[in-house]
Structure formats: structure tokens, C-alpha cells
Image (tube, rainbow, N blue to C red; front, side, top):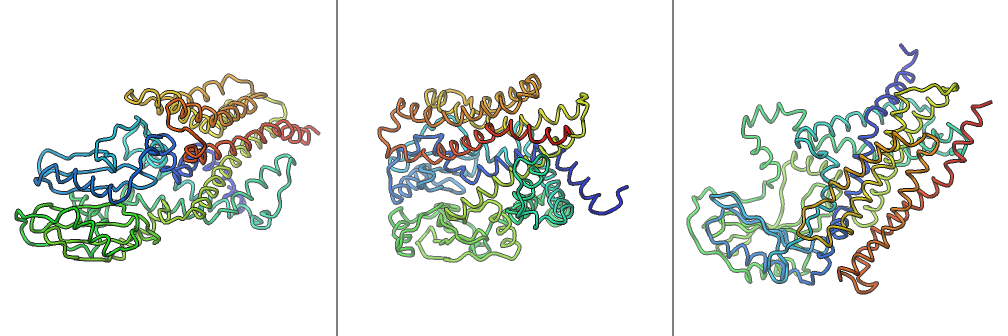
Length: 511
């Protein structure tokens, strides 16, 4: 038993951080990229950037398609095209025989055949439910990892009694002390963010590991709980039995939107409940939501005569709390500068986890002065390189697959996800073969080469497929290319300094 609480916390921090560190790094990195998943979608589906339309056209074609499907439907939901998602997505729930889901061109109303890519959605979904296993199990695993992350953060603060003092100390190339300084600095800079993002991630899925309350009050009708959680109390619920009726036209709906919102704000969605009945309602929501409780401006119209039934969203305390937790984690309210700050905080989280894993490995190497083989330490080193460098390499391979295969085989099966996992697996297998002496140099070199050449491959592919004809067209893609190149330069810096770092570390402990 350790003599003090701090020593016990140090042991706990070290081991819980190691055992799930690689999974936490994966979750953090993919979650950080998910702040820009819409931008990744636009990059990986260049046909999005070819659409020229107005919001009025998008609303008109979306409603026109829904009306053409007949009156025997339970509801329509139209995600209105916008700059970051320039296609209409229509979801029509039928009274019988399921539903209809279509992706339509916002100007012509014709069905759009998009490239068979999941784009940023794959990275986002993998972040919170993993891949290739049942969704519920994946979410349970991620929740457990988040719980471990919370333990590691709290125990780390307790362990480092001078953590805030050490924040102003960064000794470069000074053996093990440099790694600990770096770990402390990146941890303290965004510590509030780490605590917030971990707690809110856990709280979002409370119903998985604390289901008893829902089961007690809702029994087997658990979906009723989520319907209530997502339905504003201000929404008018008619007790009248629905009867067939006419419905207001598209022009009148457009006119009502322009009359109530003369500034023409971006519209996120239009939902029609029980169309062509005496109780039909049309719910129109704005896209911009500057609140942190998921309460965008909305109007509710009567589908029969266009009467305004409600112009505000009233939520219960529970709805506001859950909406606030969800919003803090997903940051839909974030303006560009705030989103950049959140992205940088996420990168700092990745660096915190990576430096902790490397520090654990380095301590064991320094204690092994006779260079005796230890299988556990050997595997930790291989897991480190395949997670910390192999995962970024796999993500770049995911992007390369899109440009080199998907764009030229639009109707072919999607090979991007397979490429991602094959490359990631290859990095681990090859890491078990490459000599320890050259391990990090080899993988950092691979990453730097892939990062630096991605913009060149991107431009060449887009020109070949006639998606761009000048630098003005390339502006839609330059953001991701620039970020990849900047990270490539950071990896190049590490590659140039890695020999010096190793030399300084082992020089000190060789004495």
C-alpha cells in the first residue's frame, strides 16, 4: 500500500491512462476532427460545391417533392440545403409500408447520386460508437473509456501538487523531465475543456448505464421518453381526430416565412406533421442557434389555413439541461473563432494523451539499464507508434482513397473505410517488425510524405474530374489541405529532433 494519497493517485493515473490510452487517443482525435465534419464532407464530396441555388428554391423543390408523394403520409421532414450541406434531404414517414428517404438537388428537385463516401460522418460515428460492432456495445465501451478519462484527469491533478506552477516551466531536450513538463503544460492549458468534454460525453449517454429511471416510468415504451425529451412543450398537440383536409400551398408557406422573418435567416428544416388533415402543423426552424440549450428560433403554422400557432420554443428544465449538455459537447452554437479554439483544445487533448503514453514507456526504458527484453514494454511501444502515428496515417489514407478511387468510381462500392482499417492494421503489423532504433523515424517519415503530397494529389484529382478550373474553385478545399500540411510540418519538426531527444535522454542515464 502506498504511503500517501498522492502516491496512490500517481499509480492510478499511470495505469488507467495506459490501459485505455490508445482508445482515448482515437476518441479524442476523431472527435476533434468532427468539429469540422461538414467541411470534411464538402472536401470528400466535391459535387456538393457545384450546386448554385437560393434558399427559396431549396424550400420550393423540397416541399414540391413531398407533396408529389401523395396525401397518405404521416409526416414530412425536409433538411433544407445550405452552404455547408448543399442538398435537400427528404424523409417521409408513410402511414403504412415504412418511409421514403431521398437526397435532392436544391434547384432542380432531381434526385442526386452522390459519391459513395461517408466523409466526415464516418470519423464522427467512429468517435462515439466505434465501428464493426453493435452500436450499443460500441457506445458502452466509449462511455467506459470516458469514465476512465475522468478518473485519469482527477488523479492527475491530485498527483501533480505543483501542476499550475509547473505550467510555466518547459525544459526542452532535458530527458524525462522534458516529457513531464510538456505533459503538464498541455494538460493545464485546456484542463477545463478536458473536464467539460469528458463529463458531457458521459452525460449524453446516461440512459445506457442508468436506465432504471426510464424503465420505471416508461416501461417498455422507452421511445416515448426520447420523444418527450426532443419535443418542445410549446408545440401544440391537438386532441381532435384528424380528418382529410386541404393544405396551404408552397407560396403561402414561403410568404409566412418572409413575413415573420424579413431578414431571411438560413432555414434548417421544415417538418409537416399529419399533412392534408385538419390537425396538420408545419414546423419551421432556423439554422443558426446561438444558445447552448438547443433552442433555435422556430415557428409553427397551421397546415390548414396558415395561422401562426407558436413563435417560441418553450422547454422544460430537463430538456434545457440535456440540451445544454449536448450542445456543450457538440458546439453547434460555436462561431468560427470559438470552433477554432475548440479544435485546438482537442489537439491539446491528443498531445496530452500521447505525451502521457510516451512518458510511461520512457520511464520503463530508462529503468531497463541492461536492455533485457520485456514483452509488455515491447508491445506498449508498438501500440504507441501504431496509435499515435498509425491512426493519423490511416486517416490520410482515407482521404487519399477518396481522391484516387472514389472520384473516378462514383457508383462503385465504398473502399475508403476498408482502406482506413487496412492501413491502420498494416502500421501495427509492420511496427512489430521494424527495429526499435528506426521505429519512430520510419512512421513519422511516412506521415510527413503523405501529408505534404495530399494537396498535390487533391488538386490533380479535382482538375482531372473537372471539379475545379481555377484557384477560386480551389478555395472550397484549401482549408483541409492547409491544416494537413501544417500538421505535416509539426511531424517534420519531431522527425528532425527525435535523434537529439533520444541522445539527450540516454546520455544522462548512461552516466
